[in-house]
Image 1 (tube, one colour):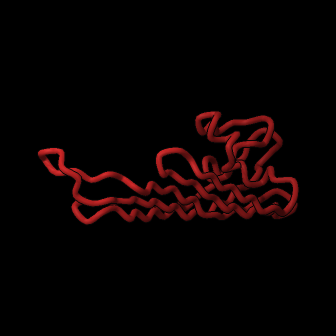
Image 2 (cartoon, rainbow, N blue to C red):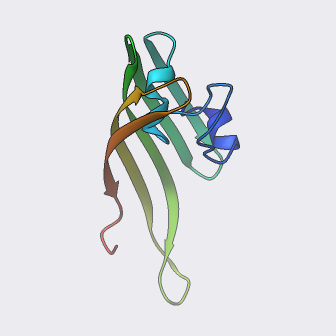
Length: 126
């Protein structure tokens, strides 16, 4: 869903292997085989971090629901003034909350709806 494989695929929406998430396409929610919780976290170079939590469940016989949180952050950003002198250290955080519902109308057609709320914490001058 929201893990490393999905990110390396560039946010592919149609994925036969099931690695894509209802976060990207709510119509995938009814194809979840069982109730599941997915957790991902990463500490990346240059002060970056990544965490996700996704909870999903099929709603038998033809629907499904998923919800989750995605958090990305950057810390230790070196602030400089116009002349290049160091000023202070900055950080930025972005969080997305989502819920998705999907229904399978036939073996080949499904549809869905999703809601996403975004929250950004940037430094004061932005």
